[in-house]
Length: 124
Image 1 (cartoon, rainbow, N blue to C red):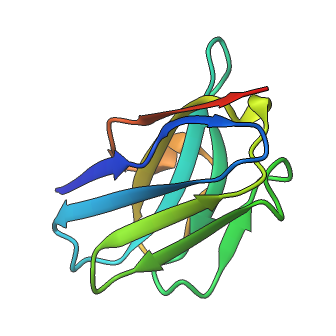
Image 2 (cartoon, rainbow, N blue to C red; image 1 turned 135 degrees about the horizontal axis):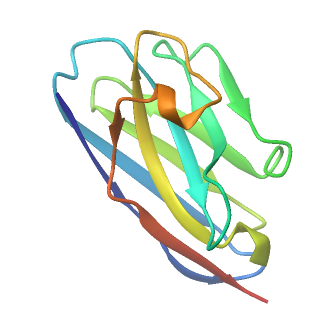
């Protein structure tokens, strides 16, 4: 089992920045790919960014490419999502998710563990 706890969400003006953090505990010695998903009201959950266990490969949704950066520190069992140049359309609940194995997936149902989510609100 892996437990994930997100932090760092909040209210920010358009153009501002936030850094989300995901702390993992439990069986963290197993290799896990990590993803950040988001879900806005009445919209499907979407993958925003993902990173392999080694950190050698990352993925970004087109809507956030060039603005968001995902990173991880396996020694500290943490995954970060740096979000810059935020837009009102980035408003959503952001979830950290873990997938067994080294590779990430683009689909939410292939991630076994989820955090409780953190709200990000970007005002115009």
